[in-house]
Image 1: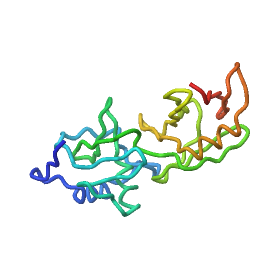
Image 2: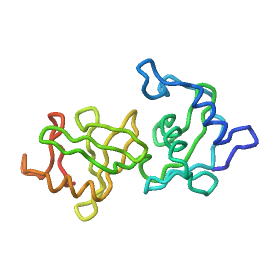
Image 3: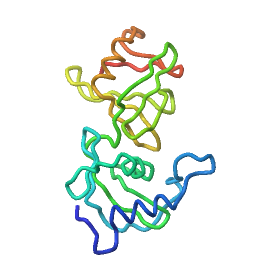
Length: 183
């Protein structure tokens, strides 16, 4: 995917437009689900499997910039885009766009913190999804609008330590839902 800088699309311009776009009426995330601007091309931006964001082959070192970009990320099918009210650019995502780096594990709920500052409680609207094999499980939690966070190894081990057996499977319960921790 090529960088379409020739059309005026750049990470800096996108960041400026995103910060001007504002947030929803509740003061939360920008309402990207309402934005359907024209596609402006692909940006040379990639989110690697470890959650590191790259622009033109270089890691983005400013956490505030990564957080800003994460708030305007949108998924359509298997494709990922950064969107503002006036432009939409494609980016590459190697695995999941976010990484769940910690969890608050309580008897009736599990809240995850992501590498970009999101907090999400597992439940029917934010399920824990297990892919992979028994030897190499790949656990994810749904964050928002089709965007998932890969649950990092240390956090998954903590979930496994808190697991109990239900329905003949080992798993955890959050938000009234049982989530198996084995494929």
